[in-house]
Amino acid sequence: MSESMMKSSHTLILDNRSKLTLTGVNDVLGFDEQNVNLLTDIGALIVKGEALHINKLSLESKDVCIDGKINSLQYLSQNTKSLKSKLFK
Image (cartoon, rainbow, N blue to C red; front, side):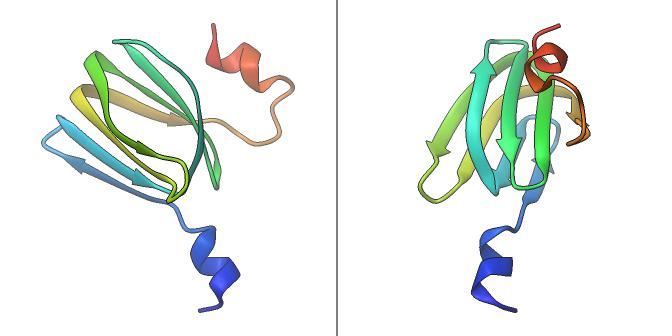
């Protein structure tokens, strides 16, 4: 696998709906205890839940770990008119 393909890899591991580990995260667009909005290598991701806490954040290595009760994960299409309007409804 080429180096450029490895850098654009995105993985998601959900452990017992209480720990979410992500790779391939480019930016955190916003967060609170109920929502974490991320920009990944494959598009925007909205994490919804309760008592959410970003436990680990390294944009240099593109890794994020979120703790709390994870209720839903939603990827947004990359061809939406306004990413911010979808994220901050």
